[in-house]
Length: 189
Ligand code: SF4
Image (cartoon, rainbow, N blue to C red; front, side, top):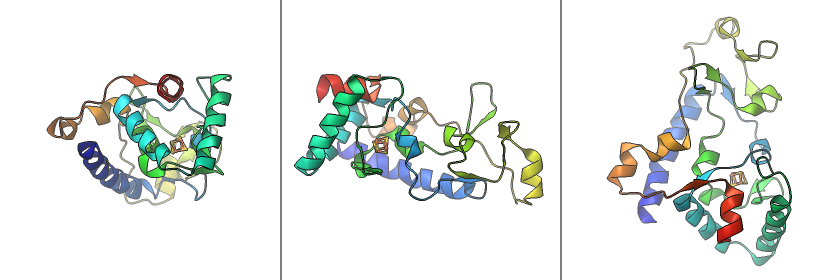
């Protein structure tokens, strides 16, 4: 697990730079937890094991709430649910959260190479000066109107990209199988 923690520290540093770089164009509103309320939160076995370390460190009352949440998710829509670890609008396992949670909010690219905004942008839940609500996409007009120094660079970030980083090989990480969070919670919780 030590090497995975090292990996996360380096990834977090790089993500911080990316979020800082794009903040002129897109950033999360403070206190928003919408990204934890809609998704299937895919993660690898290694990430799940670390997440469970975070759970083990929680107060028993919070653990009880999480257990209840897990039961609710099992009986609901397994493709899109509120993350069971979201307690009082905050991540109860923040330090241990999976990679998908760390990278959420970055302006990325879809499979065709077009800019892809996080879904919350379309709901007006985060801040973007370059999102055209009518066209539902990046607006070069708004970017030039805003007199931004640079056109935003798009990053291609997916779980696979992170897991195949040379750094992961250097640290000899074995991520194991990727699954929806609820699938791991059902079998290994
Ligand atoms: S693990 Fe934490 S950050 Fe990730 S979706 Fe759940 S509550 Fe949100």
